[in-house]
Length: 430
Image (cartoon, rainbow, N blue to C red):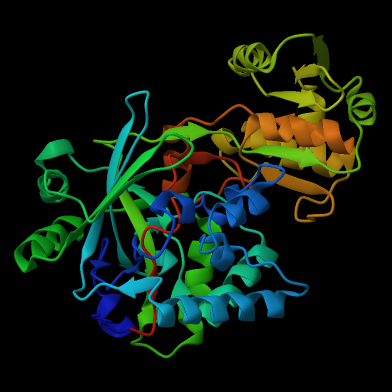
């Protein structure tokens, strides 16, 4: 692939999406394409998630993105061995021609999303081309970096969004033209989503896309840790090299708006009764004897007026809202914009976790970040911990803060739908 060096690449502004030779499963060698896919590595949240996916097919992608062994080094070497074996056995094959890949997701409720998968040049933060909006946890970046070093591969794309001008852009037109053709693959996963993938290899089409994206700016919707990992690994390798690029899915949200959902917290070792007792006098607490859906509606209503959270884990739901202004004034940093200071995630981390509950936010032994609402509640009830359910942030708030260079607390948002892992991979040594 074209691996322009830093000196040339950094003189350009905007997104530079480069064709690559994708690694894809041979459908004749696996049970089904659906059976070898997985959600992204950090969304495998069901109590039996890994076991379920590993049992779905002996070649499920979780064996690469979440290898299981006694130590991190053994896990990573196991993933590398697995990838080499699958390549030698023809389970995974390399496309003969470099291309970009149009990717479509559709569900039964009428949701349709299309975007382009490619190898994106890794810009400098000062260029303002790719905007992060969340902080990252160093130990997760270190873990992902070790896995990518061992496998020499981008195993799953991160999700970027940009604001095009609807159907009038060259990229949008290329996506729609491509999606009218027979796909390379089509499958439906157990969550009800159908997935289709096409390859774009025509030089003229690629040139139109490249030109259209050259002045675009993207927001990281999902994959901050993978983006930080790409940048770390790029710094470790002399340029030019394939490490100057990282695998992404780029979606024009002017045409295909994403869904924005919350990421919830599971507090290990903190029973609900203790969590609530610590909040007495600082927040209003209202016990809700309601089903989950109705409790979430109550949370949404309370969030319209200010910071609000839903605590669970003892068989009921507890709406926590109306924080003491004096408490917030003492605990929320004042060096950020008002939109940041009033975020639920800011109040959760700066006030509740740090000041009230004294829980370190970067310790897996104390806190877990879970996308699935029902799974968070079930885990809390089973383990005797506290589930903290969040209300989602609006996309325009996220984008506005990112443009100001202000990062949100880690795991503040969940944009979706997320790309399925396992449909196309990128090897860095081909």
